[in-house]
Amino acid sequence: MQGIIRFLLTFSLLFNTLSAIEFTDMYEISLKKDESTKFLVKYNNYIREFKFRWTLYVNEGLVIFHSYDAKMSQNILYLNTTNQSFKVFLKQSSSANYEAPYLLVKFKEFDLKKNRAKFEVFLSDKKSQIKLEKIKKKS
Image 1 (cartoon, one colour):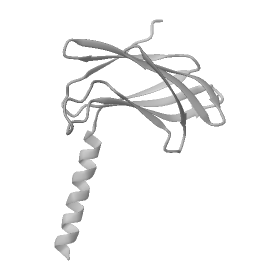
Image 2 (image 1 turned 180 degrees about the vertical axis):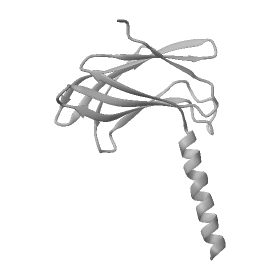
Image 3 (image 1 turned 135 degrees about the vertical axis):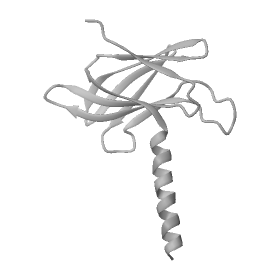
């Protein structure tokens, strides 16, 4: 019995450690309506731009516009639901058993008084191929 408990504890610790390692970078971002944030995604000899902004908060849904490598997309994100984030793959997977690097943008909070939305942006890059650089806003 003690052997089973020891195995389960070891497995649980290992699983939690592995899931925490899934993301190599994390950024916290706070944006006003129509204010955008930009990242440079660098790998091999490529430099791509990822940017997003929100444009409407209604019925607890946040309308997001985002683009990666000049391809536009739209999502509606909600707090405390399964539809709280979106994923953007940064390059194509080279084989069936390899998950391509991606960004995960998660809607964390909306401040009604300040009219600001808070996000977390995570980079998942198991092979450390991507360099992610947040572009600072010009003053």
